Length: 446
Image 1 (spheres, rainbow, N blue to C red):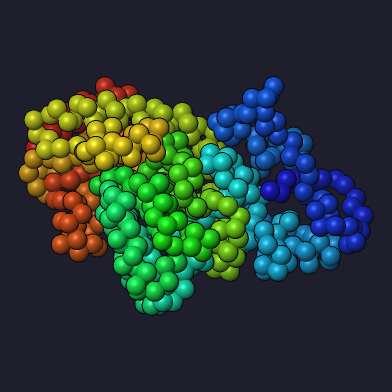
Image 2 (image 1 turned 90 degrees about the vertical axis):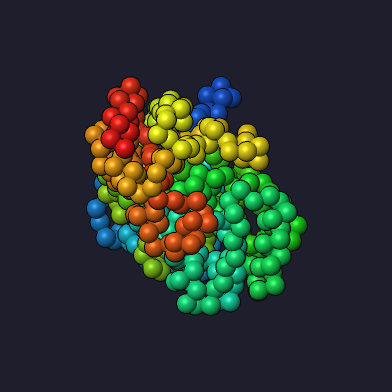
């Protein structure tokens, strides 16, 4: 982490012979208080100031937006050291600021704070969730490798694995999101017969079916059948993280996010993230440096704003969703509601108890009927907005079969439960009574 200043006002001496750890004037001791009286401070508290010293930026309470393409080196030796980190000659990334394609103050502060939620050693920001996923896969997969993944995945992720990486000789096999230990093991065995298994990619709960993956079982299978030091488990934690699920605690190695969703939380930015151990993220950082998928400073600054209220927003949305889902499940025009608070079977209930601290605020509603009934419901909504995405302050509703998963083959959609009568809903922070009134009048027209 680099501490950041608009103008230190210091006259730095030539430190070309000083060890690297002490030679960068921007790398100062963290000013943060991380515990009080032996009590470790909660991330929701640390979001207000971690990784930033106002005295290094003219006393500004909040970090300025550092809109610059490049950064001035203290001396030539410092420039050399920084580029050794950027180019990978020395692992761990640059010690200081180099160029905005590699790093920047706003990005580094946001990365430091994001990592606190997952208790992760390292965090990286990207220009979108798909940029994060693509950069991770490009860093860890080679031609001829095999990816084992849970299914379904977000449609763009499936396209990336099957169609884009597939053009370069990467293969994949999948298992159902709710698979048992034995089913996962059988899939991994099949993958071993196809080539080197480079990584296992998960999405839990699955999008849009809301089926949980047993991350612990996947980790057990990986440790039994593969080399854990060479085959990381990567998981998309967008639907539940970082408040309701912490996959690193259950055996995952890298957590990826669409930070556009709950972390950003206001539907006004697009961003992605990857978190985990330095061992796994160092090669990811190298690819990010090369292809330029880092988040811009303005969006990173906006993300810092959002992280301050992350727990409040997610908690309120989760409370609202529990009430709405109970009401919808009892409505006569509802076929079923797929919500983590109502586990479909004992297997899902067991995974939920072991992995999750909350049911989230995004769920799937199946109406009695088909596409016509689903469209009528969506078109009649007044408070909830007809839009894709999730995790914002406002309630959103969409039709996966006709929108986010339209590119998925009809037979595969049917096999995955993405039916024409399915509506995906992300509950926001509005008054819950108003939301119930909106859903009631919309269902009345179906």
